[in-house]
Image (cartoon, rainbow, N blue to C red; front, side, top):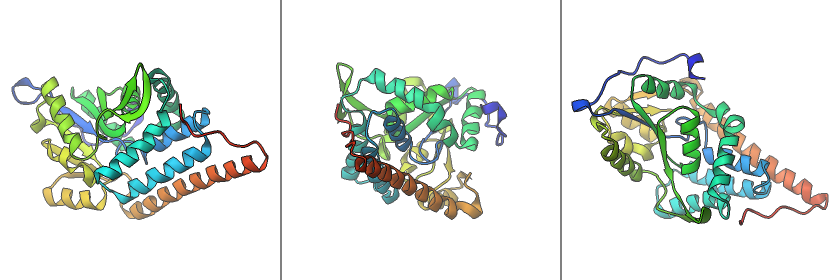
Length: 283
């Protein structure tokens, strides 16, 4: 896939200080994948009969409100994570991993930002490790990293008992400052030179992660990140198009609203036909 893309200026090859490894860390939502990846998970689960369309519409609506609010409050983060966990409660790890792999081609590929993907593959060609770092569930992060030929992924981890999801978190959502802590721990484990490493994100919430490396880059930045990047001389890549940035943001929200409306309409029509509805995913 990457060979067909027009690459941006080459990423420098080479190792970090004293032969230590250089790494590149990429956020997922709106950085690598257009929109919220959890929305694509919900679509896939609904299409495979693993949750009802009304349940998907309600969950995605809550998730959309959280994303648009930009909140970093721990209570809001927990609430958003609980929505995602509701998708998998009672399902097996194997089942969700297989579903994630099945969903990649129909739901994720068309949503990738080609420019960001090109950057990730340039890093791989330069001999760097490339890691996804996202609040996205670990299983989906793993699938995306594997299918794109990247080194690996760090995501939000759900609790399991005997290979079945409990609907609880093992730890907090991988968001904000926790991303910086996670890449710091990974750097110690794998011998990364963070001063020679790279990080990419669209969100001001990821300033701790971006500030933890020597080369930070804003991708499709929100206003907070754009202002910070310009002030500190960070690179900026906006694949939305400068003149159409506001239009794309509004259009993206409109598309989500249309999707929610369509789901609700389908559910109402289904109920009118007297078939009832499928219960939300409970295990």
